[in-house]
Image (cartoon, rainbow, N blue to C red; front, side, top):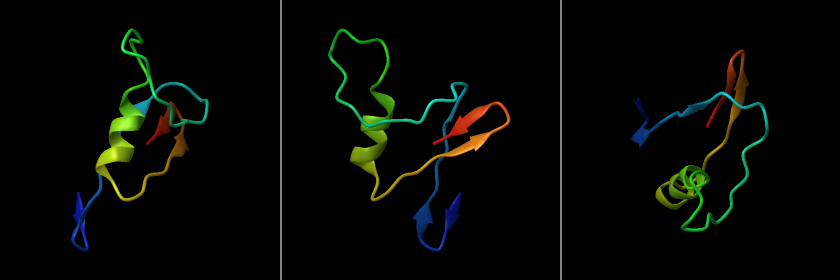
Length: 55
């Protein structure tokens, strides 16, 4: 969704834990997503939903 010259993109996850930015190892199967989001955006946040969270 584009609002006021900005693109807003949300990704949903089923877990209820707070997301944390970390550098995943090349052998990790998960953990790369938030790092990529942080590199491509000026800011990011998250909110809890009934089925998990949206980042």
